[in-house]
Image (tube, rainbow, N blue to C red; front, side, top):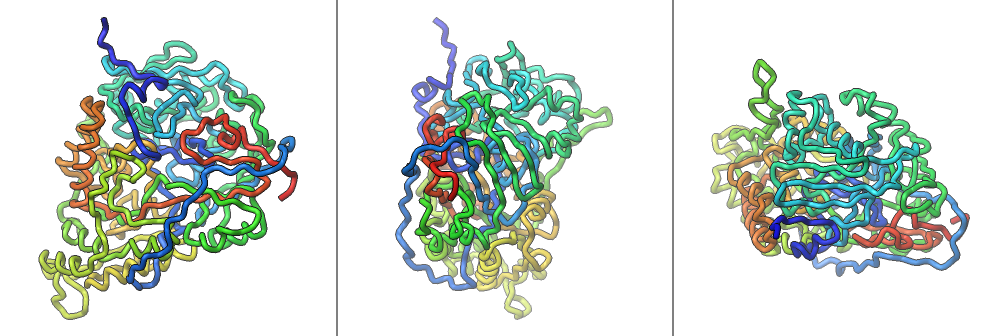
Length: 634
């Protein structure tokens, strides 16, 4: 009798008793359009956070705040379905979407949102973000042979009528692995594929570990497999790219190609008809969608500034809102004509400290890679002293921020692992509650003293210490939150100033953070956590999204344990996660600030809408193709 261990999507839950609570993190992020439909965004998702981490202008007095809000996650409105109709979606953001309609090439959350209506979901997942059979393909993991087999349905079509094939899944891997690839999706999960590094380095013309078995079946051989690969985003690149449509374009030119920017195709329920760059997208239904022709004929998506989002609701301008600012919840929660649904958000906000630089792969004279691309910590970085980082964490009152300025919709974060990860989340980690006295003591003990009497501390070496802080512009609360943090740090004697003396636009902000701009010492960001708790895609040594550029040998060991075969023992793996969270929060390369909830206002003429995670996509109101309207006009 063979002892081969195989895990299919249908059997994997029982096979490994892999129980999570609701949301995920790790090597691939799933950004949601609101109705439970996976957009297929990748790990390390920058969340458009200019809606705010609202805080007031220096008042740190915490109060109990309102009780946590209890939300419904499904609404059914009265009325018979009309034939077709146009669904209007308001995407609330103060930054334009870049318009890179490619899961392999995009990097910002706004692009993930607009792609979500057309791209399609290859591998579906359940309420625990574990792969199941609800997507366009199924997956089987063979632990003994380190392989994953992906099998497509035979009726899944690209928007131009061509069948989605195993070759298209292979092509998505080839794009990311190509030597001329310009994106940020090449991670340790991709380099784990047999032959991928040789392909990436130009040594081989193909990826030896990827085998097209037939038109609908792809086999991928990995150097190692782990339990995380049963999770959506846990190490399998579960996306396809239309080879027949894109292969004539050099990989280095794909990002700017009209086929990506102007006339993209997917295999989702709606097709892109027109794009107003950065502002709006028009979609029409795809009659040959493999789950059935969508009920709604058109979707019109427009970006809406945070400053006018409530007015747009008051005027009943849109049927659905995504990205609605929670700091304005009191102003719209009871507006007539809408039901506001809500759920825990797959994200957290944080303060990041720049601790090194990103080093591209190093090669010898013959082009052989001598060192892979990786984080290179700088022991002399301005923020290298963890006592300084810890003090800045204790100096800010995030309990007050969540309670007073988000009406109970946000709460202080104690860890980079979100509570929705169930057993992987360590509730016993204290994090950084507001403790100004402790912050002052940490700085005193570490030798940061005000030598010249100007009210600001100098370095232990007696040199001037000016900390440059980058934060994003947009919305009514972006400036107050930045001012609040800076005042809190000044209250413990730290001279913290805005980079360039102003807030930065979202795209500019992340461009500069990613480039390790020397004008940024600390920054306020937000991560979309995805659907696998494994943090190597954000905090691993070889992760481009490790924007703090923090790396230690001890952290490397934790990452290896989390991804090892022993991780199939879930209880053991959860213990490793708990230990890592204690270690990470002690080292404090980032200070997680707030866990978040997201809300979805739904107009009364939308017949049904469901934001439950893992709900059957054919349930009315759950999949985009099942949405329907009950009247022609709002």
